[in-house]
Length: 174
Image (cartoon, rainbow, N blue to C red; front, side, top):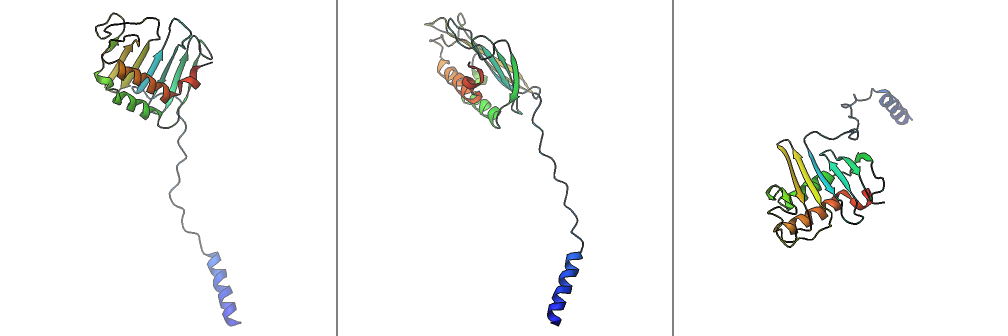
């Protein structure tokens, strides 16, 4: 009985002992981005064409914040939307630029430019691809009808990859 009393007394004293001091405060989770990070971004613009090609421009910054301008043959022509892409979108877009050796591509691959070559097919949607960094901006104007362009395979792949990264069909199509 004395042992049981001693155990109960010890348990009661232990229950009354002070709690250890709290650890450092846990910071709240970061707020979602509300705007682009200046001087960083990847952009893709497409259209128009002879038919019903969607006309749009999408820009994503390093914090995944995007701006989408919708034109003809999109789900909301004449509107501008903003949002946040899933994590990794910006990194995937910059990886696509690196894979295409974006910094070495000519900046004008359009009808009439030396980089276009021949033959040329008309009435296709053009693309403008851009990258902004703290070091400056680079824009490549590309017309996929420049069948003789030496850089056409890399540019076709780049445009396709950026469409996939940004989820263009779901983002712009009606």
